[in-house]
Each structure stands twice: as C-alpha cells, then as structure tokens.
Image 1 (cartoon, rainbow, N blue to C red):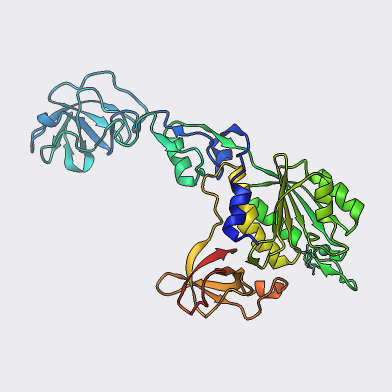
Image 2: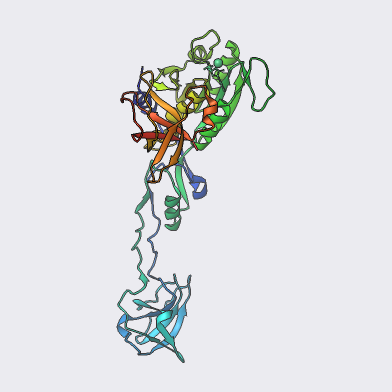
Length: 397
Ligand code: AMP
Ligand code: MG
C-alpha cells in the first residue's frame, strides 16, 4: 500500500497547470500567476514630497533666514519651472518636487510671513524627499510564476501600475455522490436511509480550493446509472465520485471507471480514515474515488484532491496545508496507517496550536466532528506520541 507521500507524488507529479488567461487584478485575487509579473513603473514614479510643507534648496536653508515664497505644487501637478535660489514653493504630500528643489521644509518647522517662509533650522539635502525608484524599479518582478496572488502581492502590483495578470484557469470539478441509501440534506428520515453529507463537504472544500463546480449529481447504486454519470462527469477537469469504490456487489464505481477508459493511478493508501481512496486519469481529466464514510472523504479531499486542484491552478508548492502544532494528550497511529485524529484545536498560552483528540474516533463518527476543529496527524511510522509531542494539524475551521 502506498504511503501518503508516495500517493501524493503519483497524483501531483504528472499534473500540468491549466491554461492561463489575462484577468483584471480583482478577478486574479487568490489565483496563481502563470508568468513572472514585473512592475510597470518605478516606485515612487518621480521624486516626491513625503510631507506637506515647502520645497527648497537645502543649501539655501539656515536657521531663521527667510526664503521668498514662489508658487506651489499640489499632488497631481507638475511644476515645470526651476525653483530659483533663495525661494521656496509650497508643496503637498505626494506632489512632485519642482526642478532644483532637493529638500522639503515641513510645515511644522516653518514660519510663514508676508510672502516669505522661514525655517526653524537648516535642512539636509534629501530631507523628506521620496526618491524615484527607491522602492521598486520598473521591471522588478513583484509576483513569480507559480505564486498565489495574495493581498500583499496584489497591492504591490496595483501600486506598480499593473492592472491585469495572466493567471491559470480554475479547474472545473464534477461531483458524483453515489449511494441508494442517501437522503438529501434536511429530508425527513426514512427507514434504512441516512442523510448524506459528502456532497456538501466536497462542494465547500472544492470552492475553498479555487475550483468551480461544473456539475453535481446523486446516483443510486445502479450499474448503468453510475456508468452514464461517470461518462458525463469525465468532461470536467476533475471528476470526484463519493462512495462505491469498494468491491461489494453494489459498488459500481470502479467498473464504471474501467468501462469509461479511466486509467488507475492508485487504489488504497496508508491513511486512516480513507484507505480505499482511488485515483486515476483519463486524458487530462483527473478522477478521484472517495470512500463514502464522511470523515474519510473529508480527509482524502484535503490530503489529495485539494493539492491536485491547487497544482492544476499552477501553484508550485501544492503540498497539503498542514500546520505545526502539538498534542495535549497521547495518541498513536493505528493499523500501520498515518492516522488523522478528529481533534479540538486551540491556541495554548505559549501560542502553539494544541490538539486534543476527541474521545470517539472513526471514519463514520460524524458527531465527533461537531466537537472538533480539524485533525491531528499521527504518522504511520512513528512510535506512540505523548502529550506535548509535536504533530502536524489539518485545520478545518
Ligand atoms: P461506500 O464507500 O459507498 O461503501 O460507503 C461507506 C459508508 O459511507 C457507508 O456506510 C455509506 O452509507 C456511507 N456514505 C456513503 N456516501 C455517503 C455520503 N454521501 N454521506 C454520508 N455517508 C455516506
Ligand atoms: Mg455506497
């Protein structure tokens, strides 16, 4: 049976990012740059004042010696006239320095008289001047190909004159939820049937991972219906099928994959919950079979499908989003598999995220999810863990 890292490599390594298109910055937010994005202009784009005050020649300034006031520059204006020696020009924050000026006398340090302004003290050249290019030069790369366009990067790009960016397209995900026993959300109970939750979770997690839901259907455990639904779903970039990937007489998903020409990449991973995970491809379509138990399907989505969706969007580092934390109680991997333990997680007094595994553990223990914030990960190859031991956490809230 493959370990999680072997399975991830088998899924992620062959994935080529989806094609890219130019998008305005607002639409590109949270998506991945397809190429390096350079600044379009220098920042600041011209020498400008950092203060409201007076543009002066520093060499002309000395304590108590008046300068003649000659004109002014407001933000957005440009003064073509050279600042004559012995004069000062009123200037507002952000306005371009007039030619010849090399320092700003801030209003607070100036006494204004009749057509004059007198500095409290002499100024150094460069005082309160923001020089062209001191922050960024046109052509400097502000976002690299394969990096997600986070808010700080978008802000930097906007300031640097960039209005649109080439980003990878969002993957289109088709969801099939299989199971004749499944009742829709909130439906009245019926004998022998259970309320389904995987459809909701996959939809929410897929959205969070940047995918677009191309279609979603619930199929009974029927051979022909499953085959037809799988064939329809294969038109998407990613087909996710919940349930029915085992080998029981009512599990029609694997035979449907085979009949539709989907090549198996892997089946079964050393993970708990989630061992019977199936992954395959047909052409460029990625296909996943999630075990039907709700906790298995959540864990497998976060560990395998979310990284695949991020990789399709061009993210270079698409490993599962695990964060460091520690255990508040002993735990161990069970059954030789990396075990995801449903846990309450909160920040301890020293700032570390601390996980307390819930009493009930199991792939069907959906009630335990109600007490949890995510999972603590006990690796398959580590000895029993003690309270205080470092662990990876998978946060869901
Ligand atoms: P399966 O993988 O289809 O054999 O399903 C395994 C277990 O998960 C069974 O007990 C199913 O009833 C349950 N199950 C399957 N699909 C869902 C679903 N969408 N929501 C909740 N439970 C499910
Ligand atoms: Mg089933």
